[in-house]
Length: 365
Image (tube, rainbow, N blue to C red):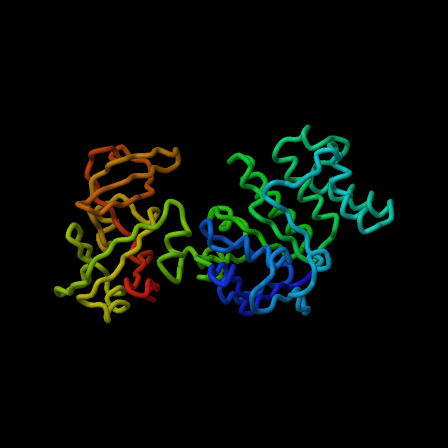
C-alpha cells in the first residue's frame, strides 16, 4: 500500500496548451479518491501522469516516499483499469488475467493462486475458460479489474471504467468496486465525468476545471459547502439554480431581480452585510424547494412561479418553472398541484441557500 503525493505538478503541451496547472494533492494510503470534472478538464491527464504514461512538465510525483518522475510505468507498482477493457481477444479469461504475471516470470503455482483468488473475489471463476467475446460488458470489466488485482499493486488507477456500460450495470459495478476497495484496503484513484459516480464512490473528491484543482473534499462537504460557482453547479443533479440579483434593505433584507423579490432571514443579513445594494448570485438546489404550506413555512423565504414542464419520477417530481426571465428547476414531492400551467408558491430552506460573489465567483461564507 502507498500514498500518492503531487507537488506543483504541471503539464504543458507544445509550450502552449496547459492541461494541468500547479496541482497539489495528497492521497492517503488506502484512500479512495475520485477525480471529477467535465471533458477536457485534465483529469485523465493527471491520472496518466501518476501512471507514468504521460511525462510531467514540472513538479514532483511521489508514490509512497519515492519520487517517480523518471520511473517507468512498469516499475511504479501501480495497476490501471481502462475504459475499453483492453483484453486480448484470442486469450481466455484465465490467460488474460495471468498474462502480466507470466511476463514477470512468476512461478506457475503463484500465478494460479492469484488468478483463482481474484476470480473468486469478482465472481468470475466460472468464466476462466471463456474468451472475452463470450462475456457481457460487465463480465469483461470484471476481468479487466481482475487482471489489475493479481498484480497486487500499491495503487489502483481507474480511467472511466464504467462509461461503456448501461445505466443499471454501472450502478451494480460501482457497488462492486466500492466493496472491492473495502476488501483489498488499497489506495485507489478513480477518474469519471459523472458526478453521481463521484459522490457515491469517493472518500474524497477532487473537482477539476481547465486543468486547475477547484476543491478537494468529502462528498457531503462538496455538496453542502462548495467553494465557488463551478463546484456548486457541477455537484448535484439536477444542477443548482443560480439567480443574479441585488440585495436591498427596507427594514428587512430582500434579494431582488426584475422578476423576483425574496425576503431573507436575519442570519443572511449578518452574513451579507457588506453586499448591500450590490449584485450578488443566489444559489438554490432543486431539492431545497418545498410547496409552501401556511403555518409550516411562514418564516421561510418564498417565491411564486409558473410550471412549464413536469417530469414525474415516481418517488419525486421534477418541475421546471418560469418567473419572467428567470428559469428554475425544483425537485418536489408528488402532489396534484404540480401541473403544467399552474402557479405554485415555493418555500426555500433558509439554511440551505448559497450566495456567491459575481466577480470572484467565490462562495460567500
